[in-house]
Image 1 (spheres, rainbow, N blue to C red):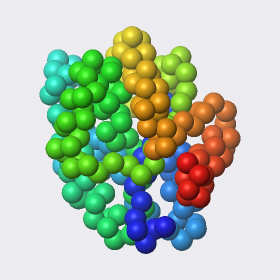
Image 2: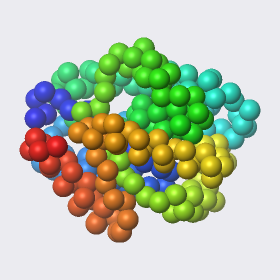
Image 3: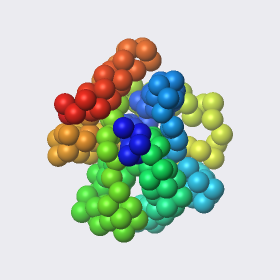
Length: 216
């Protein structure tokens, strides 16, 4: 499988545990002998990291929704050119913490900018490069908000802008993920995020195995 490269992504509300699950999957795949590269959106590259700091800095609370979305796609375009395409072309597995599906949910639905605009910008920035498999770690909104609040108490103050949104905003984000999974059921696989880290990972691994077997 890795000889042809593979592009996997993890999605979900803030605090859903996707980053932990991504790292666990990467570790298991490496144990199986796969060459795995991890990246993150926004970020993953030096340029993407600079953009990430702008996006998440609470001092930029007056950032316009359109500017926000364009910055996300600028970071993503660099990720495609610098990491995703070269690595998968070399036969590696690339796993990303978020991708365009986050923009679909957060900006397309949460900011009400519309999914058609997200699709058009994705064609420009990513040039048709979509994940082969997306694992959506789904948790309820109340759990997400509580975890984000707890996390904010222990992270740097310049990394919390997206956590300081209204409940109504996150309700729309969650609806965006539900709509996406309904529209692309073969690519976007919902993983129940309830339970222990180990229990959730068993579901993640089962979903990946099902994809690898061709049953999805």
